[in-house]
Length: 355
Image (cartoon, rainbow, N blue to C red; front, side, top):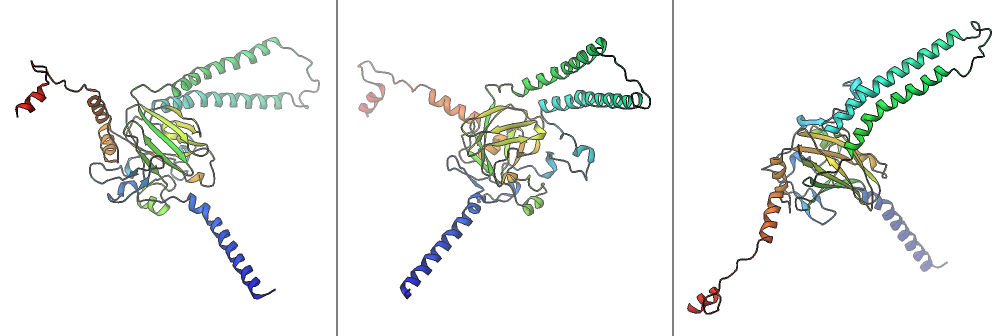
């Protein structure tokens, strides 16, 4: 083998090595998202996110609107170190459906489960003691006890009816259609972050990525739940929340708002969301969607309508509903009709001729 062949082989090997290295680092580069400063400390001149849908850049300016601090956090998990009992049950609820579901769990399901468990345990202990071999040398041959069969058929039916009534009511309330005047917000699930489109406020989109640990802790927010750009919504106003999967199936879920809906590629799911109190609420993607599934937190910031409109006005292309309605009314208004003079010419032409 001559030196030329050896040199070519070495160049070929180096080329393959470089190509393999580029392929190895490509996925990490594709999934890595730029992590911005906390939403409460964004620089006015700094671009915090770029819209995936339409290329708009969303800049959160200081002045006119200020995000809530950690003192307004309402919906978040409770650790066992803080409160063992609270860590084992539902979070506090801040929607009407959530409060109804929590009441159903605490006032109906838990008492029934507890009573049935005690009853079955008592029967088991009684059977062990009464019908053990030492105390029951001659087993009973009795069968087909009509009364017992009626009881163990009717009683479970009654229990199921008691559970079914509030269950069906909750299902109906959860899937109640949003009213026509509801504000439409679309949550797009991407691998692996969220984008929020404000369809009734100009169509701009805010991209939301998880903050790293140091930024989250410095902002006073829980790690792996804090984001750079929150989903800002009005409080006390019905929201038509639409969810969509841009690549794979995701799931938009905020436990303290009793909201969970799958984001499926190729179709839009929607249901009503109405938050009762201003504050910050945390959620997560709850559908296994890939390598960084655990890094898709959701942060909802509920504000008054005045604050919400102020925040919307600060977004590039953002418009309040009143502004959109005013523009639509101006566009639909008929053009002024020019009056004609006695000689048949239009008034404007007559004035121009006289000049």
